[in-house]
Length: 347
Image (cartoon, rainbow, N blue to C red; front, side, top):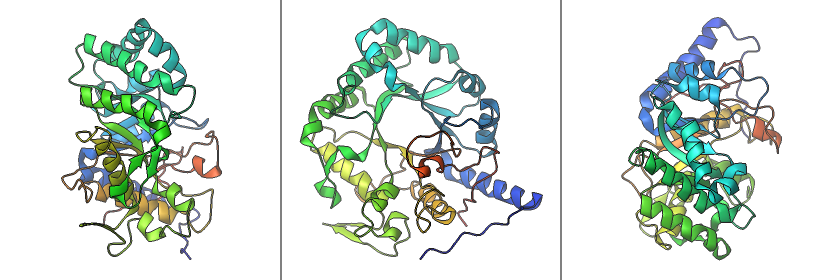
């Protein structure tokens, strides 16, 4: 049974500053492989300019923004924060069907902000591979790629889309990783596009969901990076945590479908601090998971040991208007007040 993570009911100014300082030190020491997703589904969030200041104050060098947010883009000018900007799911059909729409999107939200440090354009997020939007994803990516090329930005900005582990047919052990056959009509042209343009696959990956979906078979320490030794032996490779196992299963699947050259960017990962099972969704576990992610991704996985693993933690804030389970509202590193939800401390 997990112990409760205790905090004072009325924290002093000193303790608040300490928490803030720990977060700042944490992100300063990790380098630029760690980013944080800036979700905006809340009616009590601070203005974008204050959010960008919070990123800068904590030396967070990468941001994922799920769609064009003019105020955020304005605040990002000159900040040098690397940005992953999303093309909204609802725009996919229009952009896929019309190069002028893609050109207009890139002109409005990229070229206009020439002093914003764009790194990726994520064309759609977690599109159902057999759903109605699936046929539009790769054509929309190609249209956006064309517009990026015409703007002379193809060497600077990579175009991709964010998928999630449901695309796997098999994932254990990681070397057996393979994609679902029914998803191949979506995945094969996607992988071919990424290979052709030397773009990474973006993967939203949550050991938390793998754990709560199968608590009888998945070890909680394995999910939280705290298992003391190798738990899964896969040939000559040994796995101590679920993060590496999931990631390497996707690498194995890519190898079997022509994507051996591709890199994977973990475009979302995290652990909720409240809203679910009181023994699992705790501030303590969220702190353990995210602090271990920050430390772990400096290196690689058993299959890809060269590292680092570019990774984006979800999310900057607790978001009170997110749909779904109550846990969805409690993935934030910060409260909307900008106070840390919990300390993240390497020491």
